[in-house]
Length: 415
Image (cartoon, rainbow, N blue to C red):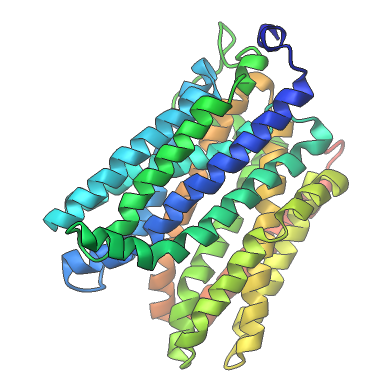
């Protein structure tokens, strides 16, 4: 609390400043990631001369984000949120520059290595939602996490709209057709890092007194956070909900455009994905408040149920595009329920000294889940069809509902 005395601010004032700072940095940082995702598959296709491995770069970003998460958490537990997030954005900048160099040189291996580094910027963005919870009152944690998630989504939606202008700008400087967006990703990550560096003062973990330091500090090895969380029933539920909702959402979303192409509806796929993104983030502020009011576990159960309905609707859609719009919107909405409530539950259920390390482990799991889903979904669709992919997704989401209900029936479920 010495930090509070030095700044003469109350905890609530610091929290308000922290949330607004993270909202701004996440909006800009998400713009960097969205710009990359919009262009990187095209860059890979140009280097390879075909689409066979064009989906691998996006999965590589997720892997890089997963690997960076526990490392950033280790920095944060010792030095604070600001140094950790700035480090993540800085490595992301190096990765984006490496992508530009690999695109110009036509080197696919360098492209993948650069994208691993780029994923550190995404990891810094993800950690922002947990930083928003550090000083939050327990009955406001869901709301504060949701505020950061929602503004981050706004940047992710708006940034790709600059793609055509970024391409023309890059070409005017002699860069490849799809390299301009990656140059802008460098700019976006730089701005996000500066916002955190300048505005995230006092550091929320400094206000808490760096609970991850000292003789009682938890093991900071990369998998230690996961191992510690798995032993806590509520934290285990949060991790399962994060992983299941991420796998289901990424797998179904990734294969929906191809499914629609198979039914002669490729032109509508862009609008369906837009509806999906609206579901993922559009109601986040309300979902955060619902999580605070209803309880984390109940909100996770609702999220799993909404995902189940959405995936079933996607299968039932067949040749009816309207059902697919509804299905993908509900899939995104259910994922948002699970992300916000699980993130809050994870904070609620572990001690202050463990939180940062556990959060790093959770984002390691989240990134690996996204990477696996992206890589496996195409294999399942090609081997058995989209309907089997969606059916497996629905069964997984329904299993999450059962798990949440069973948890509430435990003696003293705590949350």
